[in-house]
Amino acid sequence: MMNAYLKKIMMYQSIKELHEQGFSIAKISSTIGINWRTVKSYLSMTLEEYNLFIEKRAQRQRGLSVYESFVREKLEKYQDTSSAQMHDWLKENFPEFPKTAIRTMFDFVMWVRRKYNLPYIKPLREYEMLEESPYGKQAQADFVEYNLRNGTGKRVKIYFVAIQLSRSRYKYIWFIGRPFTTELAIMGHEQAFSFFKGIPEQLVYDQDKVFIADENIGDILLTDAFRAYTRERPFELHFCRKSDPESKGKIESVVKYVKRNFLYNRCFIDIENLNEEALQWLNRTGNNMPHGTTKLLPNEEWLKEQPYLSALPEFIQTTSPEIYMVRKDNTISYKSNFYSLPLGTFKGKGTAVVVGVDMHIYLIISNLQGDILCKHMIAVGKGQKVLNTDHRRDKTVKIDKLINEVCGFLEDDANRGRQFLETIREVKPRYIRDQVLLFRDTIDIADKVSVGEALTYCLNNNIQSANDFKSIVEQQLKVRRATSILNYQSIQMNPLNGELPPVALAEPAKSSIEDYIDLFSKQS
Figure 1 (cartoon, one colour):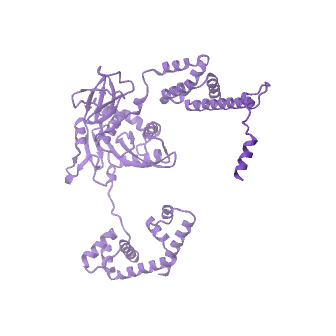
Figure 2 (cartoon, one colour; figure 1 turned 90 degrees about the vertical axis):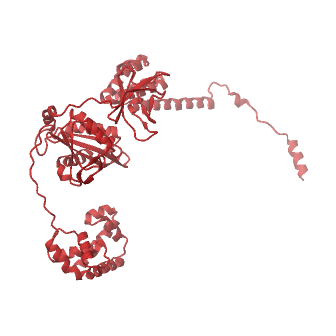
Figure 3 (cartoon, one colour; figure 1 turned 180 degrees about the vertical axis):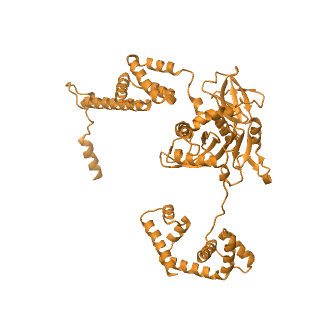
């Protein structure tokens, strides 16, 4: 008993010492190996209060000793019994059983286990190695949430779907910034099928509320949107038992791999950037490293599996196309929601587009000639603004032509300007249009000398950013403006031409002394 008491006191002192050293409650919890709530509770106690707490707990535990034989018999027969179940059995078999805290019950059951050497034995689950699925037969999917940190250290929650072809282990991940709905999950499937260049025969899922409206005692009822989607795509559904991740171990391993190899310690910028980085990771590592079990490269195995996948059908128009008028802000209004169109779609009053719906999920917008302009997921509710930021860019001019036009404004510096923009194009091909437009806007507001000096500085120092070019030009303008003001002030204050400025010749007004004499005589 004395040893147990000293052990508790030493733990209490350790908690206090770690807290004084600046450890957080979570860190103390993981270091000592107890629940964080217990740490928080102990920190709020003085040593006297903690001693009293130990004594009361011991008394409560001794009060349960009359049930020791019952607990022992049950544990000898059912060694995997939890303390919560034992608590219920005691209340069931002993109507007079006193009201007991959950923690006290847990301590009492653990005390009986230690006294009679009856450790908790987890039921063993039988496993067997399964044969590899045939090519094109199956894929497994899972929906996951994860916390990243942005550049300021703030925590950002992101969500992703991971889908893997079971035979080749060829995988795909797609990130979004809000919880999955059925519509977003369908969009994730379409992205994956496009990445796989085909559809497997069967997809394996958890019993996820994104898809399931009701478990219905095993006869699973799907949500309306997902049921409509499965009619349009040639794959079977298989839902695992609820809370049984081991029945789809392949995708569970993928999720761990993504979290530990790709997401861990990654700085969040935005969802678009995260998806780009994910594709690069898949090509570089996720699908291009030998799989731990098969020892084969998923990329190479996918080349074998792809012919066995069902072809991905073109979108199916589930409603007749309709004509909609384009608003002057390059949007259309569809069922009380607004959808963006590429910049320049509006050509004046009367501009129209053709709008169709694909699988009740996507809005397909085409021009009157039948060319698809864009594709949006249909918004839920009313008054929503569905925007594609890519639509804001001016795409009416090709990049090469745009560079030539902008450099034409530089006259003698045209070649150096073109050289600078081409270096940006090499390192930032995705953002080259935005970079060129920013460069154009900068030279519009600057003088030729400042632009020339900034170009020289950027080329000599291997600077490859229109943003940096703009900053250099702005600094040049500030220096010139300050120098100009200083020179002006010097000329005004120190004329060296021998002529005084007009203000120096002005005489101040003079008061008559008689006015003051008259004023003082009246006061006296």
